[in-house]
Image: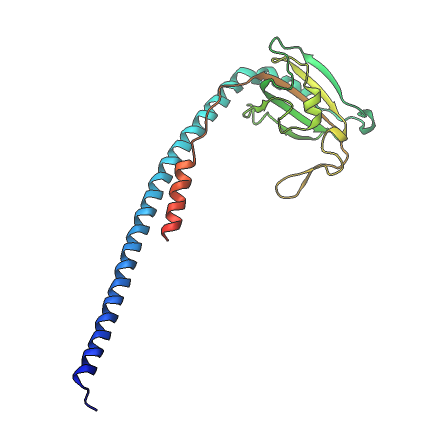
Length: 229
């Protein structure tokens, strides 16, 4: 069937509109892809910079830990001889004994210091310690006993000792890990329920703070890359 001029014109308009619409969508898609590629490139650049900063941070932390280990290892390792079995019923309340009295600041709720330690249970099993292959790990930072993420036996038992000193703590279960005990990240029981604990703790001056790289720029770049997808 033949079509009239008006019909042909209408069809042409529809075809042109369809083509223009397709081209427009294609152009938007191309621009979106270009924007996505740029956002991804920006993110990868920021990520690379952050990784370099993080590596430098870790190297500084390790260098600091090695320096502190060289200073304190020989002194602290001798207290490994304190580790021994003890009767569970012998630890009913918190008890402390200063093995060496320090000459630094008196530890209170707000004192900033760091600690090396050895912790063991009634079986004489060490569950955690700062000694690792003839050197010391990074000391535990304590930014004030009252707000530190440590057990109550530490919060109460370390109060009153002097920085530079070494103290033996005998901690009843209710001031340690209580009825639940403690498990590792894989769910393995590390400290039995209702287990009293003993610790040897050396308090040292808080080392210089080494700031971690700021993640703000990285997170912003990541969010931009996600939005561009």
